[in-house]
Image (tube, rainbow, N blue to C red):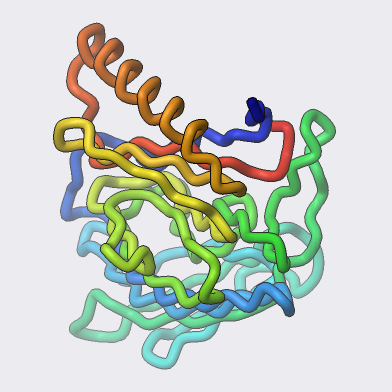
Length: 246
């Protein structure tokens, strides 16, 4: 039996347990070009009144941020650092702005512990999280989001929250402290466990292994729900990756 030493138990539901209207919301439209290692992003960013009319954003240094309806000011020097920082000034009488950026995900330093890079987008797949700076983020403020992804026909995308029937859109209505985007040639297996969706995402089609994981996942949810209360999120997933991470 194949042993998944690279299985990544993705924390798809990081953050707080209940949504609040006082948080930013990202409506992300993403296109991945694996052959070129490039990502194209448009983000309709909705800002709550509590944040005022000026916010500071952090974006990966691989990108240059643009907006057609808001004023942007670079806050840091042109060179150096993992991130670029911007001050966004909202136009009058609106709480929403459109942001756009694109860039090439460069090979990032790898962890000495397990060899996993900080960010990946290549012909074998994509792994992007907050460390890559692929979403323009406001300090340490949690956010909600929706995400639509255009990608190669034989790829699937994975993120937090609820997945659309065609797998191209994800919606997270509970606050998140990061937004993950994983993509590649995954084989997905899923089952309902009460109102919770359990799913596995394997790099090879292995129904027996997927079934074992799904059975154990349900058992763990029941065990810990009895100890600490009901599981508060719509999904629980195990995602295989290419590195020795667990």
